[in-house]
Length: 266
Image (cartoon, rainbow, N blue to C red; front, side, top):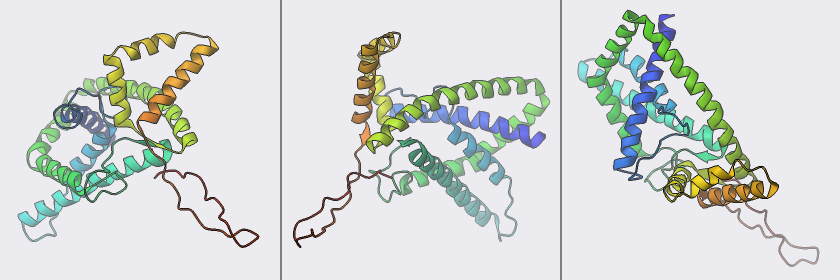
């Protein structure tokens, strides 16, 4: 029971603190604006929740089989950085394969793998792992101890999971619509670009008009909303990957048969 509550509490803390970290990262370094990170609406990132759980339990491993403290810390940090990279890769791959959506895109980074992970951000994860092991881990040890001394706080954690559940259901309904459009058009939608476009339209008050239009019931309005949604997604989608044309002789020994059309981008 204690282990179960510890995992729930760590996921709650990691998701919340990770959301704040990503929010400021986008404001200061990438998007240069306040942009909600992740695919959920609320202030939490599940990736960091799972990451904190891994970092917490890996930091509790002593690695006594290694000869000295330097080796133990070095190996521990490298394993933790690798574990965070693996979580990032699996999360990105699941959404690309399953939902036709790129949660992030490292295609422009050197040495990237499918645009999901790259050496640069693996180094960032390793640095974060080192920061956690040497400076932050004692804080979370204390936080877990505090939880069991103030057991009433479990009610707050329960409310958090209730809100997250509703958010996940709502967000996946939107992702399902995006997936259907992406699959039909054989594209991968870049979620970050999609959210930037939404933010720009909100600033210009065009998105507000779109929300008002949602209340209309006429067929013409539904068609116009579909056009809006289709155009928005087309703007932020990765183009389909073209297959190489294969030469094929006809019955008279000349000519070419056309190759297949576009294939899904992975």
